[in-house]
Image 1 (cartoon, rainbow, N blue to C red):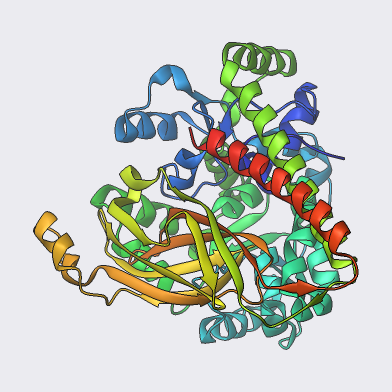
Image 2 (cartoon, rainbow, N blue to C red):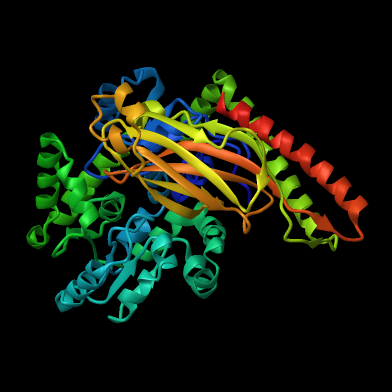
Length: 503
């Protein structure tokens, strides 16, 4: 089953499939609207929502809608309150949940990301769960698929807990992922459309739900009738840093919500229904659309946003070009050519700067490399500078095919930048430089640059497309030349499409 979307954010947690299945919107037709993918005590749409080629937004309740209209100056005509996609799925199963005998607890510890390594906190949290009274046993721990890929499930399994994840293949194929981390996304994406269906399955029959923070799972479980409570000892560092950045209003809201979901309140006989009512309010259940009403709205919006189809067609061309390049590379590998360690050529095909500057970055420049051909000494010199807008840049990550190749410190003096931006305290040493080894990289590859900010956010600076060759010999020279020519044409098409997508 192939679900077509312009925005990958709409694929998160199976949101797109849930909405399309509910109202009969075609699976192969992209949604013309960007769905907010999470909810906690903060109402702000994430920065990643504004890096997409969709300009209409679907949020979960009216409070969130008004907050983002005021914060981002979004036109009220471009932001819609249609309730959480989870509501459209869960309402079909609520009667089953209400008629099921319940026992035990499901726990949702805050999940990892590439900036949050597995640390001692998770072991402490597992011990706290183990110490919960018998009333809360047995306990199942639900982990994000990324947590599984990093072996976090083993921390909880050693305490005797059952561990689950809403992309089950990630857990089943953990041994393979451990040996080859690159296959993680294949197994993660396999379960993506059914993510929240698995969530329902894991919650069914549970009496309690718990976490160390307020997140979407808190409201989802409470909406299903589980009695949710906040439970933690020391909090992990990333949560403490997040709370330090709360506004006074956010701090007050968070305090109220944490108090409401405290363990002490579990003893109130009516707490379960009170929680379900609050969850319904936060998830926007009263704004749920009818099937025909929602289908008609999505069709009208699609027809009125002509750029949606154009963007989708260009992305389809891009996928085809990438597939052709991949096929041609495989053909090159099977021609029997012996590669010699002689010096060849590096060609910088394109250097494209990201459009994210106005959001997180004050300014940035990539000084090297420039577009052109260079002698291949096995390394590519990359240099430039960058300034964060509201948070300083602390490092630059060089990335290809989802893997971080190098992490650079911001330690190159740039007096020229300091003159241009005297108000920026970090301008003096805002430069970076590295010689990147390319010998193990594919012959044609996109190299991305990401600025890592002190507040843990990331901003793309752009990417460099290169082709590198060394002298080759063998009996298939004519075949090689033909394949290389086709590869060159396919790569040119790929770069042309990418440039269109940047416009």
